[in-house]
Length: 72
Image (cartoon, helix red, strand yellow):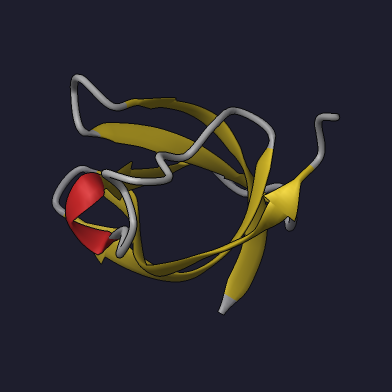
């Protein structure tokens, strides 16, 4: 599992991107891997832990867990 910060997330589109702490490429995150997406959607600045996988178009997150937020 890796940690990172949500760069942006669109509830309307159902996806967003995470910037990993290790400095690699941004990681795609789809609403289907978020257990509480309807009640607590991701926000820019949220800290998350995720399992990185490789999708057809690049890095993709699986098993995302919210850790908190970097923004007040």
